[in-house]
Image (tube, rainbow, N blue to C red; front, side):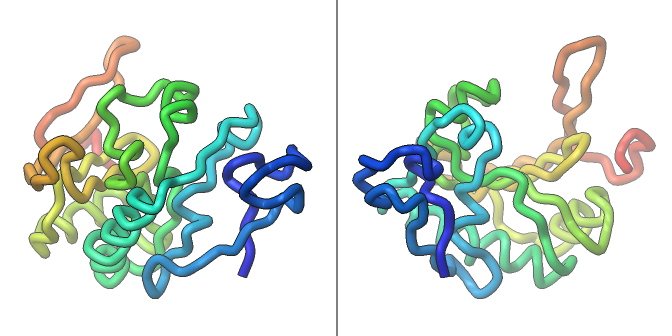
Length: 180
């Protein structure tokens, strides 16, 4: 099993990770999620930004998969990971939060394949899966395993809305008609 090199994206013959081949070994982080799914970034690849996690971040990604993504998948079926780990450079390029849990391997933005974002949020909340955050966003659901600074789980349940050009977070309300 191979994946594109997340350090050079196949652009460097002198890359110390892939030695110029553009490919590195991929591996399962859990039964249904591969490292390649959690480090792939279109922005990083297009801009040539490394998105190469440290061993500590890979361990955090394993915990995210085992303790968050796998239980969610068991509830709602297959998931597409839109964003997992983000290096500081990738996070800056996409305009991510300076305190983003993605930069520590503690969060993923996911899209359910067989249900709606609302359906996913409702089932995760009803099942009491332990999370730092679940945020129902306009095109995906953000799930955070632990808060990076404290490694605690705050249990935040939020919805994100864009209002007049700015982003607004509100407590998640399953009957809110703005949530699809």
